[in-house]
Amino acid sequence: MDPRSSSAFSSFSCSSCSSLLVLLLLGTAGFFPSCAVEVEVKDASNATCLYAKWMMKFLIKYETNSSDYKNTTLDLLSDVTHNGSVCGSDTQAALLAVQFGEGHSWSANFTRNNETYQGDFITFTYNTNDTAVFPDAKRKGPITIVLKDTMDPVQLNDVFVCHSTEFLEAENVTQIFWNVTVQPFVQNGTISKKESRCRADTPTSAPTVLPTAANVTTASTTLSPAPTTAPKPVENPDTGNYFLKNGNETCLLATVGLQLNISQDKPHLININPKTTRADGTCGNTTATLKLNDGNSTLIAFTFVVRNASAGAQKYHLKEVNVTLLNSLNGSVISTADNNNFSKWDAFLGTSYMCRKEQTLEVNEVLQIHTFNLWIQPFLVKDNKFSAAEECFADSDLNFLIPIAVGMALGFLIILVFISYLIGRRKSRTGYQSV
Ligand SMILES: *[C@@H]1O[C@H](CO)[C@@H](O)[C@H](O)[C@H]1NC(C)=O
Ligand SMILES: *[C@@H]1O[C@H](CO)[C@@H](O)[C@H](O)[C@H]1NC(C)=O
Ligand SMILES: *[C@@H]1O[C@H](CO)[C@@H](O)[C@H](O)[C@H]1NC(C)=O
Ligand SMILES: *[C@@H]1O[C@H](CO)[C@@H](O)[C@H](O)[C@H]1NC(C)=O
Ligand SMILES: *[C@@H]1O[C@H](CO)[C@@H](O)[C@H](O)[C@H]1NC(C)=O
Ligand SMILES: *[C@@H]1O[C@H](CO)[C@@H](O)[C@H](O)[C@H]1NC(C)=O
Ligand SMILES: *[C@@H]1O[C@H](CO)[C@@H](O)[C@H](O)[C@H]1NC(C)=O
Ligand SMILES: *[C@@H]1O[C@H](CO)[C@@H](O)[C@H](O)[C@H]1NC(C)=O
Ligand SMILES: *[C@@H]1O[C@H](CO)[C@@H](O)[C@H](O)[C@H]1NC(C)=O
Image 1 (tube, rainbow, N blue to C red):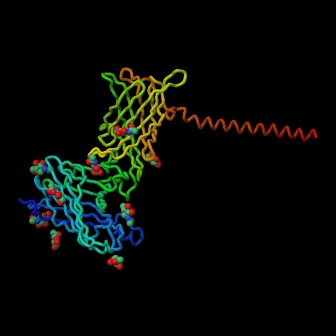
Image 2: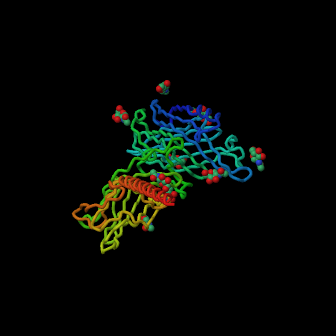
Image 3: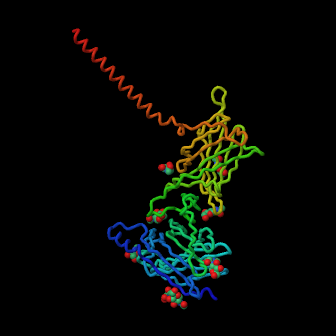
């Protein structure tokens, strides 16, 4: 059976358009005034083979007839058809194709193998003859851009769901997608109940590409969450247990939950997942480095040094933290942050350092690391166990005594002032009487 001989049905649900109208009348147009597109493609036996429902809009920069550039937005407001959508098979790509407005079209093709499916290419054609969108375009006519889809492979027979907003930038166009549900290669005509969520919807894992100034012109930038929803609070990270060995002997021990706070463009919290994080590094007598590698997207290196403290005693402290963010798809470096001027986590050589409360390491202006349940010993580990711990000030129960002590001192001072006032009055009175 030719998979192309598919009958198809598409619907265009515009529930959000009526509210858009209200918003426009109120003069507070929402940032995303688009409608959901729903496409269901059926095969020759009338069974659903491709299903998709999603929201999208386009930001397009174009040259005007006065030779400057303007930005415009193209929304899917009406007249959506899906001519040319194809079910696909083992050997043929599935194709999701829609046409809308005055000669604009968008399509994505998907390939499969035995276990997974994956987006292949996205093709977008916009027509600058559409005077409503491009009133003063210098060049009139269709312009087509093609870009590689950056979607991760999805388990075959899972439905891919992504509520977060995804931006794809290429040439002069930013394509924005949100509330995406898609399943190509549907089995037995039934949309799966098993969802595969995008990374941006699962805030504890690192996004594919972090927003940095350097990559705004290409690739998928996962700027979650959608502008209409408030940022999701991130839970505290899981605590990981890491160690380094020197031969058979453990030489460094670390227990810590780690969270990155990247505040480029928007604050962005990333929890380091201990299950996918490997430790390596170097032990030494005066310097030790613990390197943590989270799923090939984040490298964090902690360097400790030993110094001579007073009375011949030796102490150690955290000296340097170096964070490298990698593109998890191809391993290229997105950004690095380094600070070798720390003097934190200070303890005597031969002891461990503990701080259960949250602490912040300011690596640079845009990157902070929050630590939780910290217990570390970078030097002189004996019998694979932590030695006696020096606890950080934040942990000690003496903390709550401080306000009490301050209050008591203030009260004492007030009493003192009052007494000296009384004494002073009595003295001056006796002074008057003697006159
Ligand atoms: C396909 O199914 C729909 C209802 O699910 C029905 O209305 C339609 O007639 C069927 N088409 C064919 C070709 O069987
Ligand atoms: C168009 O948008 C781009 C990217 O958002 C921006 O850098 C540029 O300044 C904008 N141009 C105009 C004319 O608004
Ligand atoms: C496909 O496109 C043509 C015009 O190009 C249109 O007449 C036709 O109705 C469309 N078919 C469907 C199923 O949307
Ligand atoms: C998907 O579409 C692109 C652009 O039209 C094309 O180059 C590519 O060969 C297609 N992929 C497959 C597997 O057919
Ligand atoms: C540019 O196009 C607009 C709209 O068509 C027109 O009103 C305007 O006169 C044109 N300007 C020039 C310099 O051609
Ligand atoms: C589709 O149907 C076949 C036979 O009825 C069954 O073996 C298979 O597990 C079904 N696949 C899915 C994904 O439901
Ligand atoms: C890795 O991917 C990013 C974005 O997709 C791209 O900008 C970069 O050039 C790639 N690097 C390598 C080494 O392929
Ligand atoms: C993240 O860092 C920014 C800038 O340094 C700061 O304003 C913000 O409060 C931090 N967020 C958290 C949760 O610590
Ligand atoms: C930080 O770590 C990266 C990757 O391990 C390394 O290439 C870079 O040289 C380090 N920077 C400093 C200042 O140590």
